[in-house]
Length: 327
Image (cartoon, rainbow, N blue to C red):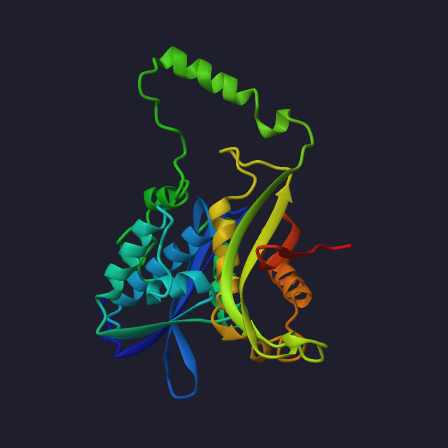
């Protein structure tokens, strides 16, 4: 089946409706025919319940499996998950225990190619893979003309059994394992107590969670009547709070780790930079007020449905804090 393709472009994307929630993955594999990129292989697959990060890695893995099966020797990879890309590049450590096995699998697959590169692209440059992932989520069926079905190892024809396996919950177990030392009766009683406190039974309360991260950067306040008009630096501590009303099946409104990773991804654009040269602060003053508002807008656009951004706070020092929220 291998075609021994000298060089190809792989675009991958994964998405989750709920984070975690129903998730899909998509990829396109193309070659440059001199007039542009011609797609030679593409696919979308519904993977059941997963987080965004899990879906992004599974999309990459599936795309790599297809590229290897078709004999690609050199691979350029484009993905719109900056976090995943920087983890593969080695710029970020993988701290999430659920992602570590996927990271290892992806790195193992990358070792099959003579050479590869991976870079972050914005969603508009990854629209085909994104569409395939969404179509798979809508239909809950495989789509496309892929060479290898997701996690099946079979060429061109996924079986009904493999479809069912792919649609099983991903990254989180479907049922909790039995607790040590409990009889079946005791465990049933314990689960009955937990069921009494399901989200549907608890009314309309609001949950709010907060995370904090930091970056180091310099700035100069143009027009400021004091020393801050000159170049100086800060360790900027950024505090973010989000809120929601609905808990998932585990009892989580929004995972702390997902919020931390999202915030870290945004702050990385400013870390060890001169803010006055980083958009949009090359056009507006790099004040704490403007930084808080820009971060608020960027974060709000990336949160999943049902999660509301409450506020963003910027600490310029341990005793100086500014908070921005929507009026």
